Each structure stands twice: as C-alpha cells, then as structure tokens.
Image 1 (cartoon, helix red, strand yellow):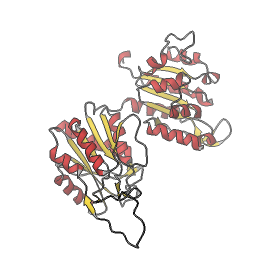
Image 2 (cartoon, rainbow, N blue to C red):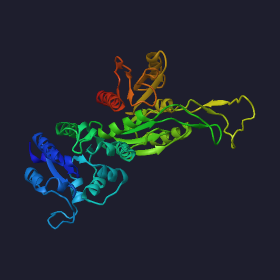
Image 3 (cartoon, one colour):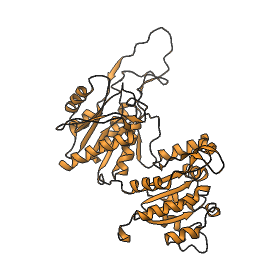
Image 4 (cartoon, rainbow, N blue to C red):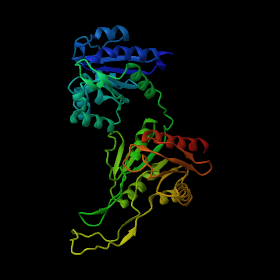
Length: 402
C-alpha cells in the first residue's frame, strides 16, 4: 500500500500508567497498514519516553507546540486536520474532562478542539475516578459529541484496586480504530433531514400534551448518517438526551413548529426520515393563564395537528426518499403497511412498543423494515445505532435502484 493510500492516525498518549500499552496500539495500527503519528502530554513522558514512539513511528513526537525542537509551529492545526482518526489511548480522567468542557491548555486538548476527524478514546484510570459522577458526566458529554469510547476493562490495576478502569486490550482498541477507519461513506451527497423527539402541545402556560419519545432513535440515525458521509439536519422536539453538537439542529417543540421547520428545509433535502413522535391532536384553544383546579373534572377540546409525513409524501419532489415510523401496540405489520401506502412513503420502520427492549426510552430497538416491493425485513433486538444503519442501508439500496 502506497503512503498516499494509507489511513492516517493521530495516536495521542496521556499520562497514566497504561501509557506503555500505547506502544502495542501503535504497532497494531502499523501492521494494519496505517500511517501513525504520535503526540504525548508532558505527564505521559514521565511514564514512557517520546524517543520510543519516535523510533517506532519514524516521525517527530509532538509534546509542546512551543518546544524549540518542534518543526511545525502550528502543529495542533496541521497535526489534527491531516488525519483520518484521532485516537487517545490511554485517556485519563483529566484529559476526558478537558475534552468534555472545551479546555485547551496543552497540545493534546488544543488538537482535539482543532480536529475535524472522527475521535476514539480509550479511558484508563482508578475505579473510583472512573465511577465518580464528574467523570461519568464528562463521558456522557463526549458520547453526545459523537466521540467513540472503548470502554475500559475490569480487573486488578496498578493501585491494587479491583474493578472497572483498566485500559482495554490494545488488540481491541486497534480493532475499533480500524472499524472506524473503514466506515462506509456511501451517503456522501445525500442531504438528510431527520425529525426526532416528542412534540408538546400546550394546554396553558403550565400544562401540555406529549408522549414518551426520548429522541434516541432519531439521534442515532443522525449520527450514523453523518458518519456515512451525509449532510444532516436534525429537527428536534423534546428529548431525554442532547443532540450531537456537530450536527445542525433546529428546535421545534410543538407539532406546528416542527411542520414549519420541515417545510422550510424540505426543498433542499434528498432523504427525509420522520422519527419524531408528533402529537396527532392539540388543544383547540390554549389558555393564556393557568387553568385553576375548580372542579373534579376538566374537559379539553382537541383538534388535529398538521400531518408532516403525509404532507411530505404528497408533495415530494423527484428523487426525495421518505422514511416513516410506525410505533404500534397491536397488528403492527398491517398498520405499518397501510401507513406506507396512505402516506406515500418509500420505507416504513415498524416496531411493537409493547415488547421489552423496543419501547420508548430504551437504548435498544426491535424493528421491521417495510418497503413497497420487497418482503418485510424483521430484525432482532439491537442497539439503536445498529438499527439506524440497517435503515440507512435500505435508503442506500433504494437510491441505487432509482
């Protein structure tokens, strides 16, 4: 493989006892044909010397932009923006906190903020530090920012603590890195508009009608579509998780707001995925003031909201692919097939929300993908990210057959 065709990896080593294992990660990546450059924090140099990595990588190891021996005075820019993957192994609690909170006070943290490459981190630290609420919050923030995490292993550590926190095995870190480097870019050129979350229809300034949607499925679709090269816009209602920071996001809390946002964006869209749980009805009148509890009963008159999916299906321009969802409690496939025909969809994703692992607020889903001309594809329980990729595979297949 020529140097021009080799995948380029920035291996970043932070200061923990597991820093020596980064040598095995480096060698594993090289054996897989990757071109690897290394950076280290100053504390990492106390566990293993830059000379080791320089000898193995054949390149200058960057520790400090401002060091006299650094051949590139803006290395945090050129280093981070000339690679296909930014890999941090080990990632200490300190560097994780810096990444999560946008602190850039050394070469590695500055490089992270300047990078436009996918990011993979492999945490390693004492069990108590790992399980501390602050570290868990920071890891969750990074996940929301689309950072991939190789979860640490459990076992006995250098401090004699037994529990989770050991750096994952170098072979596993390399395998995940190679998986990310070989990720499909088969949706390049597609402009994907996705709705997600629950809408809220106000009764008065205090109360509203809504549903249990968490938004996790739509967010997974947005993340995976972006990973596969699509230009993604996310229209989000109320969600239990934050949308990724690196995806264009439009807030739309009510059904009307979501309808307006979709209609504004749809002319510039090639794939529309309606994963939001949009209220079918809203109060016909919203009270300006809080309705007081003056009786044992309260009657609310409701009116239909605008049907976003039907409107898009009815007026879609040439080439637009439309994907809908059918969250049902009975006769799931028949209801989904009728919705596919009635609303002019290309794909519908059906799920029985009464099944464990397939309902609202779960990290998994059990779906059946239905298209017009093929047999339904029933899938077992899987993560929402995996389900998202199966849905996107069908989008790609439909595009190929157009």
